[in-house]
Image (cartoon, rainbow, N blue to C red; front, side, top):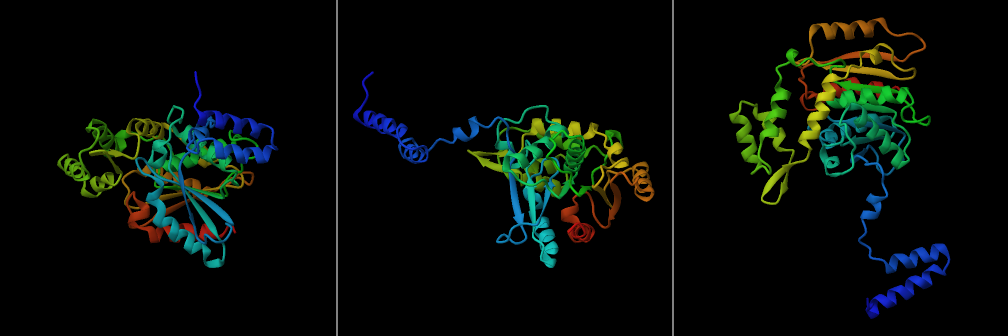
Length: 344
């Protein structure tokens, strides 16, 4: 095959590069090779890394402490942006700089656009994704982990796996783990109004792409769902051609929801790892708690644990339903801020 003069010139340049010093050769090679080679960064990566957003109380200063925040089913890290800013601002009053990492769990938010997350899509792998993120960035392990709803169980799994050495000897347990309105044991569908199950089934039956955000809201309202829920679901749509698509992978998210319902973390609450406090927050108006579970939490918190173990605490958030960061963010800040400030 005949080479063009331009191709011959490039070969001569590359040949001369090979005889130069390594560093200088690398610079020259970058000039010769095409610059649009994003596949290099992806093909060499054997592990998919979740997307995240970073919120700092003082961006110009180095951070002193780090908190990871996990959203719930069908959500994304951006749902917690406003609360994280308020929390960081409250904590920085004493001159301490906090960094909040808002994680998009696998199959959610910007992570739904990333290929390579290996099934099964369950709590174990969702938690391991977080450990992979820490390792890939070379970060210190988080001082605090906060999880809401399904994210609460991802957080519990993260601590449970970390305590067993699953993430390696360098992994360090967080000082505090916050579980926000997430039942720690198995979830019996018969004990709830099954709204989540109905939502998942409905979303799986919808056309793809969705005609418009207005179409979705109107459709969900006709099926009997609340306006607030319908509009929140609509906020998870993104423009795609002539229609709209979800910013989550509905089929894989359904697998994660099944895992969330099946996992039981009562043993972890009964025996928290030494050096870690597990704090459970129940929203007063949430419909996800039965009297037996509440009594069990209150008993664990009042009895305490042995000196060779960590701590477990229980908190009630008044005047709030399940969406704690929206329905009573001020009350949630009043619960969390003093506790986080105490680890300084």
